[in-house]
Length: 337
Length: 262
Ligand SMILES: Nc1ncnc2c1ncn2[C@@H]1O[C@H](COP(=O)(O)OP(=O)(O)O)[C@@H](O)[C@H]1O
Ligand SMILES: [Mg+2]
Image 1 (tube, rainbow over the protein chains, first blue to last red):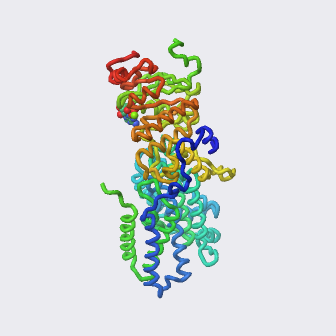
Image 2 (image 1 turned 180 degrees about the horizontal axis):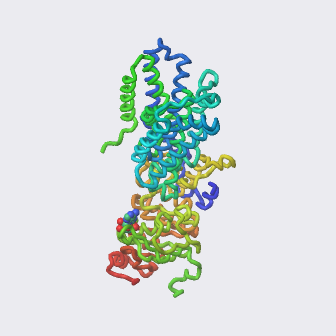
Image 3 (image 1 turned 135 degrees about the horizontal axis):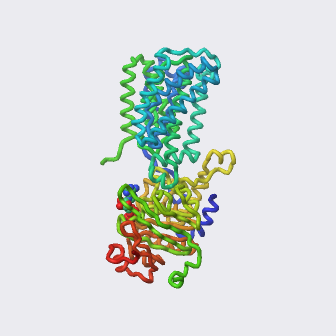
């Protein structure tokens, strides 16, 4: 039904009340300071490392390139996580899907060639995502618990698939396409990052699908009363999440030209931290793809700066933990009881 | 017979027959028969828990009844959900409003009936025409007396209870084609907005749209409706034109002191 029909059946508009011009009320969304979390964090962290590690090369093009390369898999998963969290779900299994897809892609490349390898990797994304989604709606168990289980399940399968051995990838075309090629001065992972961002942003903001995801996570009962198939939406977001994780695994594999079961094992918290700092609610209904991108870059920048400062892995983990606590305290505070 | 109910000359718009719905052991609706004709404004009353909202939710396609049948213009509703009910011309203001709190006003008015881009390729993938929906949303707001009072981009969770109720009413009225169910629509409204809703019912009737009003305000029901249906403990206990009714009689039906149908 078009808007003209709607107004026609609605009959004589504007005769019922004094209608102010559209300027009569503020036609913008209300502003909240917490929306700025990621920008403020970004500026602070950038300024900090610029001042402390400039002499160690933080401000060089080469370093910017290495940050961007590191951020691509994290950002792709962050986009998936925005859909999942907005729909009121969570996906803890993404790190395990990364390892599984990387290994299965590497094996697929060895046995079936380029196309077969890529299909294998994507099939892992589809399979794990459908399994997560169908278990959640079929068993009516929260996604937190289901994916806590499948996280372990997928990780175990990944470790068994090659008896913990790593699998080199000798297919030069694959490696060039997935992270080892260059576009100008930067890794071609950037192409994946930009393509992922555009697709995610459009699906989230401009397609009816994005509205359905939001409605499902905001008020599932209302969404159902309006005829939205909330089960289908919830399966769809789990599928999207797994697909982004599978793609991340394939890009990691292309970058290091091989796969090993530890790929992605530290990514879950990094992704969730980036997404949450970027303004996506852990309680469903709201989120931001652009915020997730900035959040992911912020997390990558922190690791990069700490490495330049000569921090140990343990010190990096401590700092990340502190950042996460501060970020959720600022952006996810609940109203007083 | 046809003297008492002159409407029987025309075909019924809504026909509910033998409707039953249980929740676990609780019999929320028990063999409900209800026939509504074009042009009527029908009151639906009963104590809390009588089954009014459950009946509305069945007719709106939100609940699938355990037994019985619902027909609109002779077409069976079937177990096809709210979208099908809307296609048949049924709009509902649910008692809980069924709003999406994080969504803005325009989004709530157009959810699941979005206006898509006119470009064929974009249309195919569900690309939204947000500008058109915002314009339509402003028209709907004007109809419910909220033109210029709230922005179509305001989030519903930031609105007051009365404003939220007006949004829910606007959604049903803006899209109404045949029947509008109003489940306690004035519960959160002030005097001025309540009057606006009652005026709106009058205008819907003028446009030939049937209104079913659920309310605990007997005076409101008796002055607005042509006919009143009383539910009690999931059963229909009365179904009479208001010429046969007054406040005390209605209350005696509601409380079970009096019963007109076996
Ligand atoms: N989804 C549900 N699950 C279980 N019981 C329900 C549900 N919806 C309604 N009921 C029960 O059905 C009965 C009728 O409820 P309802 O239709 O809301 O009454 P009314 O709208 O007349 O106040 C009540 O006893 C209520 O507790
Ligand atoms: Mg009710």
